[in-house]
Image (cartoon, rainbow, N blue to C red; front, top):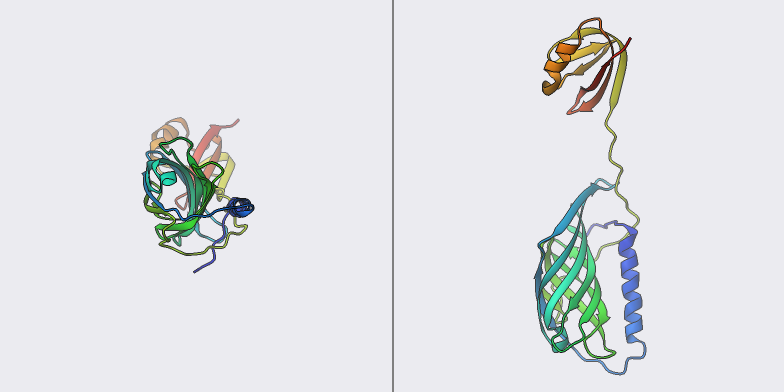
Length: 242
């Protein structure tokens, strides 16, 4: 699998999960297997994209998901997740966040999770506290994932994916600034579609053509500003000068 570079925030999340696992194991007196399943959907997901310095497109989403969990008593009840995904145009990335299961008998189960995304599935680790007093939860987490839903999710019970990605110091490339030009002097050519001032020619947008040709004439002294749009230097501003 190709190596994938993402922001350092993902690396921090992985480190935090590792520390939490260590804290959960130290001093443990008992251990028991638990399993649970859940599905959850979101009515509100925000999405943005950017292009990385290595030419890939990153899609970044943030959402709040709700649904129902079932299984062992500590993993049964309404579930709420807050999740952030970072996926590149190769179809791989990470999904991390936090989940909470409102257990019927009282104190809820809560955990933070960090998972690897691979073409529609996630697999990783959820670490937190269980419903029972002083009980820690360390669970393999797997699911089908899209920005609007978790489907067929498992806490324990085996995982359906096992990919790995490398988290590195990649960053989004700055947006390219549009090319601009300007000129000050007499109008030497003017038509419904273009204007020329001291050798600089710019296309006149159709919605500005009538106004420009009504207000300005050959040999008027003006200042024009143009921006490269769709491969053409296009008039964005014109002012009379004396």
